Amino acid sequence: MQIFEGLMYLSTLVGLGVLIKFKTIKKEYAISILIVILTSFFIHIIIEDTRWQLIPLFVSTFLFVGLVSLSLTGFDKIKSFKIIRKSLLITSSVFTIMYMLIIFSFPVYDMVMPTGDYLIGTESFILTDPVREEAYATIDTNRKIKVQIWYPSDDVKGYDLVPWLEDGRIIAQGLASDMGLPEFILNHTEHIDSNAYQGAPISDELNSYPVVIISHGWRGFRNLHTDLAEELASQGYIAVSIDHTYGSVATVFSEDEVVYLNSDALPDRDSNNVFLTYANQLVSTYAGDISLTIDQLDLMNQRLIVSQFEEKLNLAEIGLLGHSTGAGAGVLVALNDTRIKAVFGMDAWVEPIDEIDVEKHLDVPSLFLRSEQWETGFNNTNLIDIVNQSNSTSYLYQINGTIHTDFSMAYMYSPLTKLLGLTGELDGDYLVPMLKEMIVGFFSEHLYNNQIIETNKFDERWNEVNKID
Image (cartoon, rainbow, N blue to C red):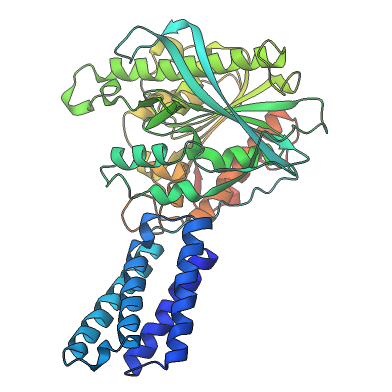
């Protein structure tokens, strides 16, 4: 709750309490409360973030202001004032309670602070593939994606914090619409600040930093894994998260160019007998985006694309981190691209990968997490084959008490997500540190050659984790 929003709420609450207990408020007290309420309201409107959750508070506040104003101007002498007073008090109280319930249900959370030693900078880039045509556009055009980079920094003074959702309300409303919710319902998330600073200088502590590319799932978006990206950056990695155009709820290239999810890219499995053909194309498209990103990072490293990342990207040490379709795409890239050094997949959707690719076998270390929700299903055939046939170390763990969306930042939307079945049984403040420790531990071992946790003993570290043999 913001300062002046809080003052407005507390003043209204106190005033209502006094009027409910006593018939009148002394004139000097009434005037003081009105001054505090109105001053708080106008300052809030000018300098603080106003959002839809505050509408009941505004209604309650101005009903109270109206009631007190009537009393001060002598309307309390008319016969019908008792009825008016009671009606306004009840209505104002109802709206105050409504405000409290809404604020509890849709709070503006603070992002969890990363645990590493580095401060964090961030920048975004639009990348266009010079070769691939866009498979999902209605007009002929080359494939275009947007990426955001988080990186270690030593000095963020004078640089602005960026929001969690860098593209703001467009993303919040795109997600709400995709979930079948009212478009405005998630607008509060545009007011959540991240822990990263726009354009801050990259740290000079090391000559270069390992790179971890993050790939979201179908109907996700790049900021759905900001918590993991920030953690990696704070630990000395350059994390690059991709918006997979047409597979993301919205990709914002400019104010005039926003590309929304193309639901036709992945039709319903039960109503389409060539579902896996569509699925293979989708995973292959995501994989192409990952390869494009690596190619463009290489150009940045050589300063053929102007940025501050010249020679700062250690492209000899590239890790892939993905969720669902994005994790499946990471596996597909790792099976075919020798530039990849390690793969971490969360509910990796590898079912659509062609058998000819699966049979190539992974040659790099890999670690897969499976939610309890995905314990059964078609996906496990390919997943277990990939793990068992790997030419390098490969582990598959299941985290009990989780569902597919737990491997995302769904916990940021509301404390009611568990009750509504949108997240699993484990609380976010328990699960997220677990995921961060696993991910940082895995990449530290394979990109920094520094073992800080035994990745083959995660099942001994947490009771909810089972190793799948």
